[in-house]
Image (cartoon, rainbow, N blue to C red; front, side, top):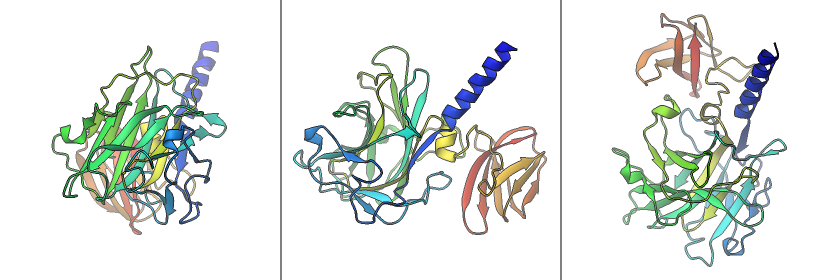
Length: 342
């Protein structure tokens, strides 16, 4: 009995940790006002990163189909002129908290920071970082640096990642078949994986992930290769928006320790109904929705199995197991969920 209670307690603890989500949608930020000073964002305490001016808040949200942070709130605007030289570069920091608990790196766990970005074609033509993790409350200790640059003619966007190097880039051009463009919305997922040992934590960047597929099935990803020290287990972690010559609108920020919860807002990879919020659930082999619309069902390898209209109950003959469902309701809202059929 004691073992059972311990196991149940452990499962509850893991579920609770994975279900915790930090969000920053800039929903109540004054339009045209400074990012710094809003919702505990502050300028870096490292003097060389406190030049220039704060990012501003602009009205309107960014959209990415199926992402839980899509089309919510407003955006922080990074100015391509600010930070073009070291005399004006600036880091704006937000320490991530789940209630009163500050985010920390734990061996065997991953931290996911997902965000939407629309990067301007006026951005710098060589790599400059614009989003990172932060590990210091008194200075600056960046890890997981996300870089961007635009081609000379302004027609193509390139993304790169390092653990902390300013030159040992792993570039998006290394991903077969991936072409990125400025002035369109992109979804990025920056992952910090804590490994037992020293100077061996792993930084991975997912670019425009396919949200009908699991994390393991994603192909548009970069893994940093430079060797750097790791965050300590006691460091309170945060996120940085950095102005270094990259013009961008950034929004829809979600941070947590589960791919499904951060990207899809599903706590345990299986969608279950919640009053007034969830639009998809199951009853036996029936797929239920609280609205009319169109349903597409995929297996976990991404193959489409069913495409049909529904009045709220779609009967299937699918085998028992997990599936991905994309539901478009009559108002045009899209929801992507994992479901379990019995």
